[in-house]
Image 1 (spheres, chains in turn blue, cyan):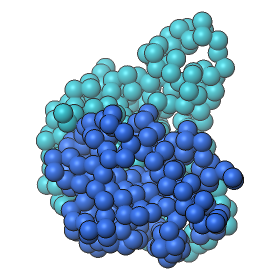
Image 2 (cartoon, chains in turn brown, blue):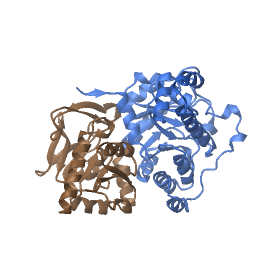
Image 3 (cartoon, chains in turn red, green):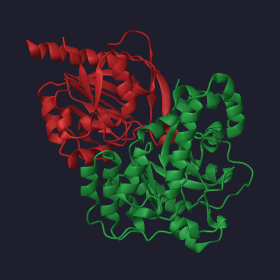
Image 4 (tube, chains in turn blue, red):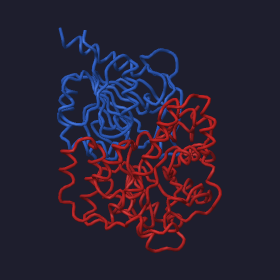
Amino acid sequence: MDRIKVGVLGLQGDVREHLLMVADCGAEGVVVKRQEDLKGIDGLIIPGGESTTMGRLMQKYDLIEPIQEMGREGVPIYGTCAGLILLAVKTVEGGQPLLELMDMVARRNAFGRQVDSFEADLQVKGIGDEVFHAIFIRAPWIEEIRDQVDPMAEVEGKIVMAREGNLLVSAFHPELSQDIRIHQFFIDMVRDHKKGSKK
Amino acid sequence: MMEKGTYKLKTGLAEMLKGGVIMDVTTPDQAKIAEEAGAVAVMALERVPADIRAAGGVARMADPTIIEAIMEAVTIPVMAKVRIGHFVEAQILEALGVDFIDESEVLTPADEGHHIDKWDFKVPFVCGAINLGEALRRIGEGAAMIRTKGEAGTGNVVEAVRHMRTIMDEIRWLAGLPREELMAAAKKLGAPYELVRTVAETKKLPVVNFSAGGIATPADAALMMQLGADGIFVGSGIFKSENPRARAAAIVEATIHYQDPAILARVSKGLGGAMAGLEISKLGEQEKIQFRGW
């Protein structure tokens, strides 16, 4: 089978850290800055960064519709922090361009400003019993979900990671840790999808 | 169970800003223009560096009223400046809840021998540097982000280029040294040995390094990115220009697509006048603020 190729949206944010994680999982990472960069990728990661900035730039470079199309066709997409916000159908605050793919409402900077950023050990469904050391930076949480969205991790009763079919989101940044399990989980989703679509 | 204020969280926020533009603003309206143009953060100030330079006198931390009004106006991170060594101004900014503190040479230094002990704070700090030794001393004190100083308020990119080239050259030099020469290198740089070793091994600074001081055009921003900056600070360059809204958006685009001359050409068109700018050789040594910092 061909090597798995994962795009990382590279408009702004911690793009490099995601690329390194993708490589550690044995897949090839490519930077996506323009529409044409979406061609030939098997999955997409939307990194951490500033969601308002990224959303506006996605709009400016006509990236919203093609990514929506990919998501609806079943291509796996993983969003961390800003990526979680961008994948939501809406935010509590409103007023910014979103991909509106995943059936949830996100609350921005839900845990507070930078002085309230935190590290915590979480139980994450689907990656084994060992806790995951998660890094939350001006992080959002998931305020509401529809039935088909599967919560995977919580902090103080708030959902901070979830999956809906081909869509995966986390409010924290696994790319800033040394633990590749969550990226591996996503790469496995990408591999399964690639196998399925080849049949 | 929840840990706050760790170094990982401080450097992590800096990582999130990479590839972005941080803009100096003095009013909530300017902050909104910056946010709409695609800034990843704003620096809340009472006056931009060009005006500080023109006004003379002692430049201090901004009035908290201004900083709070800007924090209210935008959802992106808000940074604010304190004087070098003025840890009480930093305590005040931390209490206000700003997201990042810039211990900045643009303000009048409060201490001519020492910088702030940045480990003592939960909020991350960014500090200026003109060479690798200065960058590593600041990181040693707990800075979570570095920016090359350039010469603020001049609209002249020449010093920003000098400082970025110096740091990159010194990193390449360290990376080529055998390990037994790293202690003498640390002595020469005036930098902590452990950090010198880290740089020699990883061939990069241990934290994000932005470029600042004199960036006035999209081409300037792309130049600094091609020279190795992780992102851009624009001070006076935006709101001292003829059309701040268009210029801000153009500098953001140039920072993203810094390697694409066709896009750079497009975004450079029709921006109106850039800030006038100052010839560095006409500045006396006393007027250069890049030499503030120890």
